[in-house]
Length: 285
Image (tube, rainbow, N blue to C red):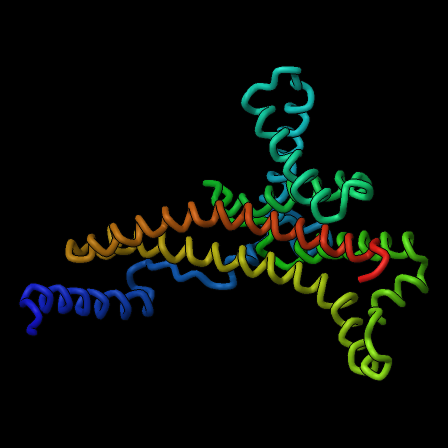
């Protein structure tokens, strides 16, 4: 079965267009902005080369915190017996964390101690993540490892503290490093693995997972919209405009996907935190 001539023409057009795009983008002659790791290390705005140095990423974080605080204060002050739309959304999210995360994972008897912590963590991660798709901000506050590490260390301190309070230091170490029901010779292999899991891998994976997803999303968005500008405006070639339309549509699709990823990563972060807390306070795990 032969291939229609029109398909050959389309393939040739695509190949010739790509052959035009790639050399120009690589040489930087067209103004094509290639995303790089430098995106996450912006220059200082204030107090350069000091301990208090402020750059654009930190400003984005300040904005996220300020907006989150304002929204929460407004929702609390205007709370009514018959809630309006904004109050409905806030209460829906609060109940989601309390019921579907804290109570379902930790248990109703113990969950009340950690609801405030888990709720704060969920809203904070969500606010920092969502700035990656906000026009004018355009970068997630969690896309540099420092903030994810701080959040992970907060979780780390909470679940270690919860375990020590529940079982005492010796009891917590015993239940964490020497799981019951295992033949004692296997502890030679199992205990080092449990030590790495409880004291190293849990906080490390929390921080790295969060940062990696935000970095990947930012790079994809920059690539799509930079390619759109190049193909539609900078290249000056009408033949490239269909490809520019595709990258534009792709950019908007990835934007919507990044909103989903921002919420999903906040959910995963708080669910894993609840799981760690549950394992710390339960009698045997």
